[in-house]
Length: 253
Image (cartoon, rainbow, N blue to C red):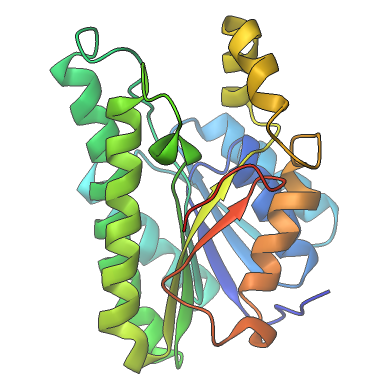
């Protein structure tokens, strides 16, 4: 397994789901993790799980839609853990529904928590990565952006596709500083996916039949450990790409 000893990772949306799985995997690989989220109790629980396994964790209450919260999260991570080598932009509010049903408020929340928060955090983390000789930024998109039928997913896909564009730009602009930037498109056993399955059983059944590996990824095992590998030196020449961690379902060509 990739060794992240001495590295510091800041992970948003780490109170549950993919964020929590990523925190556990990165801590297991030796990284100190700053776990942030809107609900203090949830991020404290993630931090407790990391410490229970012998890792180092800092719990941060942070609403990614608030610029001051993002700045404070970066400042505390640097002050208490020594820097930032890895940034995982995972938190996202999802504006689902047909276009006529998506409100301005829901779309703006998706934009503010997705591409705007991603851009803000990347810019905040960048100087600290430069100070440590480089770093890795992992942003999240969704295969919703390339769905065969976009009905009900247009607003969600729009904010996620914007994140892919920001990833490509950051990879191009900051590559000379040894900062690698990747977009991850996962299928994982998250609370959000479970909610979707329960509320869209027929669509979900059809969707899962299109996954060649026939299953959804484990939060820590399939997604978190893959992200650990992407942060290691063996994949140090990879940047600007969209990585589909989805059992072979999507085609981002």
